[in-house]
Length: 115
Length: 115
Image 1 (cartoon, rainbow over the protein chains, first blue to last red):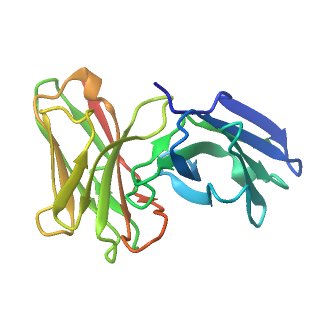
Image 2: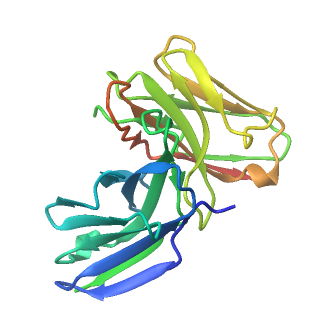
């Protein structure tokens, strides 16, 4: 069963516009959520995270929103840049696992930012 | 370079052969993880170590798989009698135990192809 789902395999946006990547989860025990970015031939790189006690976390051009009642989170990138083109993974960890590193990943969304 | 290092980057083997991968974590990190990623999917947790102790293993880790971290520094992942279904990217990650919420730092992975 896929506990973390990224239903959009790909997304294409114009440079300078907003990119919105979505993620849904099913396990109500998840209390920590992360976004990773992955370029070809490289490992995933941590981007931003949010704990379940918050509904928003912002870091520069990147903002993550968490809607616990809907079991949904999203990553907003504003403004989008061509260098943001990559695969983005949503990940979650459950209560008790948040400080062990056992993360459950979504399938990933490939973002293409066109110049 | 003080990041997570994995060797080899690529491995092609014939079905039935044994393979071994190595991971060198970030030096001050005492936790080390192995994940596996197949095409179109996100990374899947396999196992993790705290220092030299292997604390958790996923049911994905069959009897043909064994991971070690003998001195609490580098780790090896061995796959015996490889099968075509073992073809995947094997990712190693490390983290520091003291973090309230764990962020994983990934290596570039070892791409295994079983012919």
